[in-house]
Image (cartoon, rainbow, N blue to C red; front, top):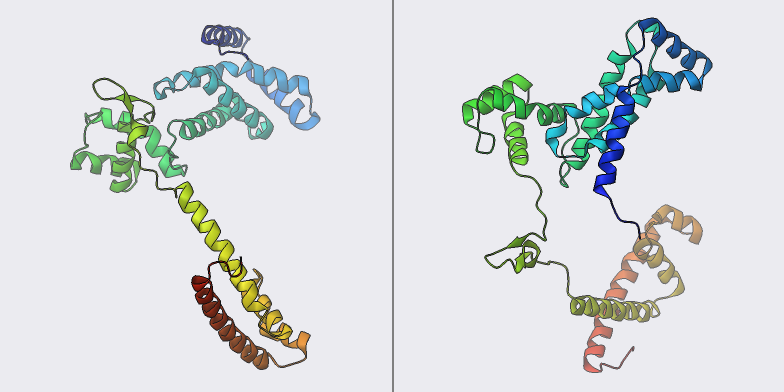
Length: 295
């Protein structure tokens, strides 16, 4: 089985970045020429040249997100996806530089990737939540708030007003940023023999409980079959269609099928259901007296 070689990965990433930064920059005229050729003639060679020239922009933007603890190579890869989206959507007739337009798509792709992978607990992806996630750190540092401690009330209010987001949202996101995910396998205690997962409570039913429930369900199923056999064919059909099937048939539809009024169907259903309950009670009592009955 192949193993992950971190050194080789770093070398490949450096080679890619070096190659991207060596590609000549485009003039405004050349940029618009390539964009028009791709948009109106689907010239793939033009698309390739246009995108390749701005991979340097992806690399540059990836460096701005280094402090989120994610591999730069992954950020560059996500940024390249954003760059391709920009190339497919760019409208040269709007007379804006492709780099300006692409920057938004690249940044958005990287931010979405960070939000997906920064924590196993999914962060909000609304516009306000994204703004809060990516602006809270620098804004808090700017007003000299503690990076790891509790944010004072006046600081919360300042950040809330600056980002136009509720104070509770700011406080919740701050708590998220103050503590990263921790592996359940992390050793704890003086000797390190225990881990966090050793102290988690398992609320799932035990194998014994599952077996008992399964057996009880099978038993009740046999009781129901026996109780249904005590009903007439018409009563069985109505009970099955009205009580036992997932898709309940209407009283009117059953009435049309049986040639009776829907009120008559309702009366038969009520009477049959009462008979069924009495039969179930009697059969369960008989089974408790004679455990081998119905088995």
